[in-house]
Image (cartoon, rainbow, N blue to C red; front, side):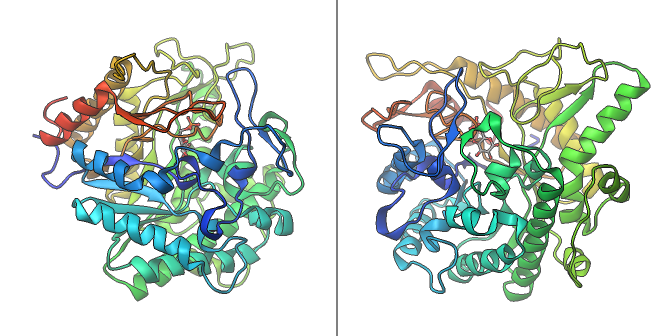
Amino acid sequence: MPFPKDFYWGGATAANQLEGAWDVDGKGASVPDHCTTGSANAPKRVTEIFEEGTVYPSHDAIDHYHHYKEDIALFAQMGFKMYRFSVAWTRIYPTGEENEPNEKGLEFYDRLIDECLKYGIEPMITISHYELPYVLVEKYNGWADRRLIDLFEKFARTLINRWHDKVKYWLTFNEINTATQPMGALVSLGTVKGFTGTINELPDDKPTRYQALHNQLVASAKLVKWAHETYPSIQMGNMICFITYYPYSCRPEDMLLFQNRMREMNWYASDVMVRGEYPAWGKRYWKENGIELQMEEGDLEILKEGTVDFYTLSYYMSSTVSQDANAAQSSGNMAGGVTNPYLPSSDWGWQIDPKGLRFTLNEIYDRYRIPIFITENGLGAYDTLEADHSIHDPYRIDYLRDHIAQMEEAIEDGVDLRGYTPWGCIDLVSASSGQMAKRYGMIYVDKNDDGTGTNARYPKDSFEWYRQVIASNGEKH
Ligand code: BGP
């Protein structure tokens, strides 16, 4: 049986996408709190002022803030061994700049962590998951400003000092590599000072993005170094949005394009976090893209000293690249690319590729030789709530089953895979579209795009299926 006996089966979420209670108990506004709901035809918008009558989905989300006990009990019923969640920065430091943390915010996570531990569920915390305090965007243009490093250290150390004896696994930044793509400016870096409009209208400034990413990489390494010195028992990880690219043809130009995309999207940030240095091709890349990184003395040493203990990734799809400008384009989570005729697509155009996961895990492990966790994977789909409150989601079961089968293969190949926490184990707000209708959960939540719904939770067919997967340690899937 390939799955090791202490394999961490579980699920993953992010604070701004499920907690709601956006201004309760002293919480401040974060970037997602300024984002509206989108739809298949209309992209979500960012507004500076809250518009009357507009739905801001993170404000209420699925009200996990008040339902966490029920939700963790359902996770326990599925047999979760691990739960990956994030801490809302604005619950702890509402503007990011306070000197003292907001005790009420900390107490919520005290309760949440204790609830997990009560059921023997190992918490994994993402310190920063796409939810920068909005004040830091307006005042500093987000991570473009180095002062964010100290503000982040203050926030992150507050969490680790408080929970180091209860939480062993920590991730610094969710999908830090999205900074290499235009969308990263909004979701990850907050370098969107003064911007209002749809997410398709985001202006792009590549040199600023790469500078802001450098600042984040330094912040991450600084924290990892401090955590290792202060609390040797905890483990620090990265988190990469892994997009596996294929060359569309065997043309040498396509092969080089494939290599460039893999480097830019996947290896650039993770080489720094795992190897402790920028890749050899970095200098040429910076020059050709007009990037002049401002570094301070000691930055390169910090990067060297703050390397992570384990590697985590999200994996949803692969993407195909071609030199041919006329090739049919496919849509996707920041990836874009051309349509791969061998793969089916989700309702949102993401190309489903379980075998690509085996390839990906092998590539990562060959390169770094450190333990790996898949901290996100799943299918965003439309679900139908039947009159008897059942939800039949065989498409989701198929998706997860096929990916688990390829994880098995990768483990047989020799990959040190330690855990699997599929995304949005309970329905929550979509990061890219702001919709509730794009559902990932094994637990259905009665909440709609227009903000209506009872917030009642109902297990889908995938709930019982996943329970059996976990109970059999992956043998039954
Ligand atoms: C990742 C994010 C998550 C999550 C997931 C699914 O990029 O880390 O926050 O939302 O993608 O994406 P979406 O919600 O856009 O379908």
